[in-house]
Image (cartoon, rainbow, N blue to C red; front, side, top):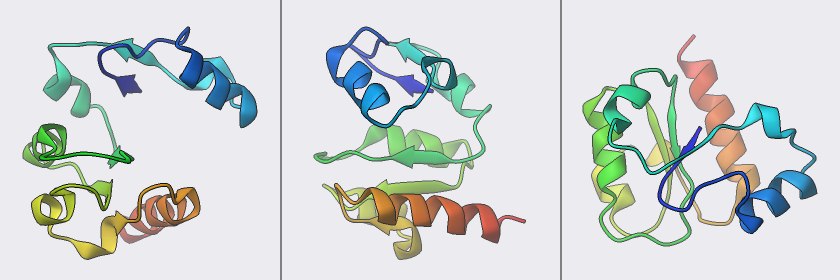
Length: 109
């Protein structure tokens, strides 16, 4: 699920990414702006924030408040908010982000 203002399947950036990585549209849910984000988060197994720029990430704090395990890129105050350096990865490093997701899944078994 991808949630946020301007987040639609028709948005050129998302469409380009899905096409370039050959990800079927049916495997991603674009929900746009929502007021029920905490309710949505309760349905997630993990929360991944892959921002390339951020200041203080309210959404990361919200995810932590719902007791979700979190992974984030090292931007803005994310490392300070999350505190767990094992799940902080450099921005624009998809291999590191992917490895962190796999490691988190392994550690939760």
